Image (cartoon, rainbow, N blue to C red; front, side, top):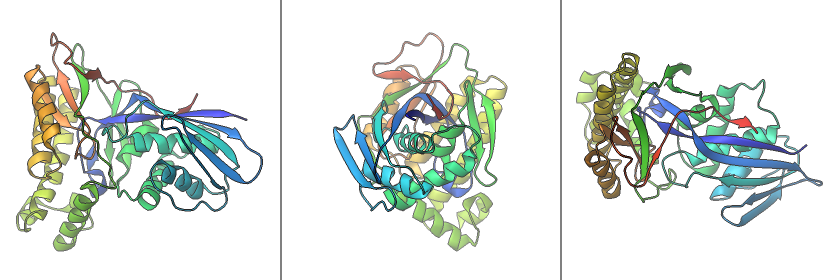
Length: 334
C-alpha cells in the first residue's frame, strides 16, 4: 500500500537552547513541512528520491551504511526503526534547509510515519526520541527533543509548553486576536551539525560538571555566578530563558500581547549576548522587523542564521518578505 506522510515544521515562540538542558520551551507546528510518499518495492533495498534536490539514494534495507546530508536522515531512520519493508521513498518539502524552522525534524517524522505506514496508536513521545537518535547518531547534530515533539504533537490554535525534564506537554492557547506572528528569512543558512550548536551543548555539559548537577534545570543563579566565562553566560541564558517561557505562558493567559513582545526581545538579546548564537544577518533582520512596527522580534531555531520571528500589533503592515505563521496539527498521514 502506498502512503504519504506529512511532517510539519515548527516555530518556537520562546525557550531556545533549553531542551537539552531539561528546561522549558513553547513551540508550535506550522503549515509548511515535508511530505514523504512510501511505495512498496520488490527486493531488499530502500530507494529514496529527494525531488527538490534532484538527488537519489539506494541502500540495503537490512543494513543501512552511514551517509551525509539528507541521505543520513533516511538511512538513520530505516536503521533505527528496524525491520523496514523495502520501499521507494519520494521526498518533497516547503521548508528551506537551514531556515531555523526545523526542516530536519519535519523530514524525520514524515519518514517515520511513511515507513511505519500508520499514524494511529503510536507513542509519539517515544517516536520523538527515536527521531532525535537519528539526528544525534546518524546526522551528527546533538539536538534535543524540541523540534521532534513539536512536529509530532502539534495542535491547531495552540503552542505546546514542553517540560523536558518530565516530558510533560501542555497545550497553551495561542489567541492573538488581530495580532500576528510572522517570520522573515535572514538569508543566512545554518546547519546544526556544522554550526556552533554542538559547541554550545558541550559548554552546557561542562557547566553541569563543574556545578555537580545533572542538568542546568537544577542549577541555581548563585551557583552559576561562580562559573568562569563563557560557561557563566551560557548557563545564565538557560536559567533566564526558562523563566521567560513561564512568563510568556502567563502573559498569553491574560491576553497581554505587549508583554509577549517584550519577552521575545529579551530572549533575542540573551541569545545574542549570553549565548552568542546570532549573526550580523540575523541582527539586521530583527532590527528591520522592529523598525517595521514589530512589538518584539527574536531569532528562532538553534541560531547562527535562519529565520527571525516577529510579533506585529494590529494595523501594522506585513513587512517585506514576512510570512504569517499560525499553529497547526502535528505529523500525520495524508
